[in-house]
Image (cartoon, rainbow, N blue to C red; front, side, top):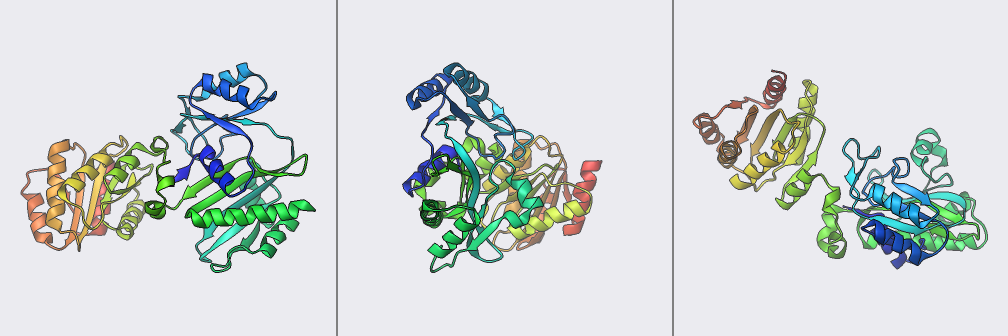
Length: 387
């Protein structure tokens, strides 16, 4: 689950990290009032969306008078901001962050993430912060610094100092960065984050360290114990189908293909998508109905898949271990009749009560294509789309 910038910065402040003074606004008039309250002769207006690349997409603007604040807010609020991370549809801008400007001497990059190969939390930093950090990481990986955190000891002082020295910090900045880095580690661990990224972490003209921008992602599997954070979720930033699937207890991820996939089990879902690609097709989604799905759940899953106008065929691939094949067949029949599906539906069933499930499908009187195996199912789904 992603947090908006203003939400992430509020969390940073709790852990002693300095951020610019700012106010959130939902209307252009509120943005003007926010700028007036912050005072000064220049401000930054930032669109609040869950995507990087806002600056290059026009979602971050420096303004020098109140009229410009209003104009920029009007141009952003109620619109969809398209960046390289959320193209082609973009995401709606419902809030803007109006922020004070600061004198920038240097821009640094700092983040914390989980390195799954090391099974450790890693502090990542670079002296080359800013909008081009992705290109720098790709073209000059030697400029990316890392310190691996021990699970018992966490991030210790000497590791933070190593990074500070490598970033070219000096004097009081060394101690300031050490405090900041250790605060970030505590924030990361105590809130079950999956990603914490500050880009840029600026050094002001006076030598202070300030988090100018921040991105945070919370581990979805930990939200049950992070209720305060879970309540901050902005569903408008998620794909509408993904939000509906979440409410239905389904695991759904929208993709860009045209073959809808309904599978039970993440591994089987991945294998199904791989086979679709192998035989020349493109999956439209990842949808795992889980091991305890009912006929009602399956019907809802069909509706969610069909909400994508790009779907030209549906492949149902179920292994009935915990979930019986006759229950799946009942759900398929119910959904096809209720929704009035007009596109090909390919079904492959194996496992508990498979013969009963296949019999129910064959006697349903519906136009359902039965597949003998996984490869056959993928081939038939691809052929159905091409036909």
